[in-house]
Image (tube, rainbow, N blue to C red; front, side, top):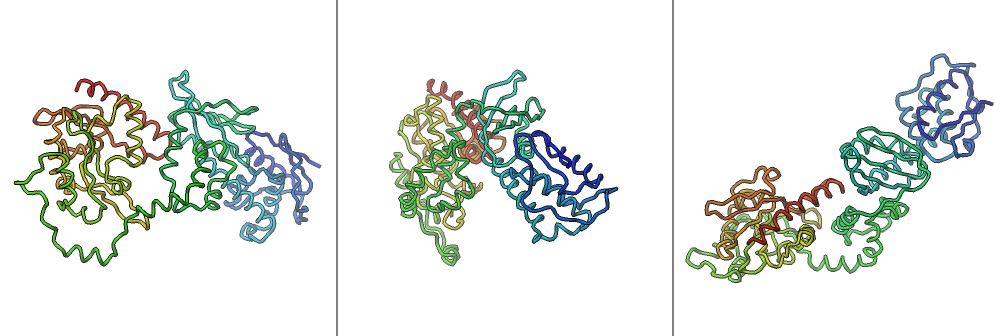
Length: 484
């Protein structure tokens, strides 16, 4: 009886070559055994089928759907992966429509294996957590990760990471094999032991991100464990937070419900549009003379339509004699509920970066270019919308009032909307960041990005890079504050 031994690396191509040769030689599925290094013989539980064929197949051919299906199935960890794939290949020479019969035991089993492998491959894409290991000899940053897949998917999954992280050197180690990408070249090698991967700043960033997106009101533990199986938790830094979050979910959901503003009926919005805006609360003859008076007056602001839908005006906060004024974009959901600027996820990120940069937020005045939360309702959530030019211009009256009362020696404009309100230009904020522009009266403006842009980045590596650049901006700012 022929016996075929599959290598642990490159088994996909090896199986195709071996299966093609066996088929051409007319070797029936029941007359060949398959093994892979470190595994038992590949004997599938179903008995071999007696398929009437000639002694050989001169020109073997298969439907175009078979190869992707078989290449996924042979990555399965089950002992029948090679023999089952070959048996279906053999039967396809007699019945080209075999794959359409999902009730056939072989076809159903092959699809089941392929589906399990694709699901495991998707989980690997989602749950690999890189840690930075320094800089290599080529000058490229190096990262490492440890992952424990259920199936033999290292070679299958590696091209995804090559496309996604082509600008750095990395290694993804798994029990048995490791994918290594160095200086633009991918290699698969044996991995006898788990490498030592110390924690880095990205672990805290993952935990911060997970804590900010966790919604206790929508917690469904069974669904969460289905999407993020428990077996992956031990290698995910954010998973440490899950038990405490689950335990406190009911109380957190009640607190959210109490704070949640009600959304007006759609018909109410149409009626409100017919009602003219109330007269402006502030007239030229009664300008506030202190920040406290300005804050109180702003509570009745009707300078634009945003006042109709936000919970309240969110005015600036900080000492009236502050020498530095930080200006952001607009309040978010948490700021709208609390009535204070920068208390949500972006505010907490800003606080962390300021502390690391040696800047005491309490010494400075912090506000937003727009004082009301602009959002669009999505079910029970309120999704942030960027203020338009009209809203920024209408709210500039309040920002100018704050500037005249605080009289800072330096303005820090965070984000394009803040830059537009202060300098009149919103374009090129990345190009202008960490630079100083002077207003017509000579007041210097330090430009940087808004911290919320970091939280909106697509993945952890982008967030970490953007946070590092934001930290550079704040460290460049710190000496200027000392001079003030």
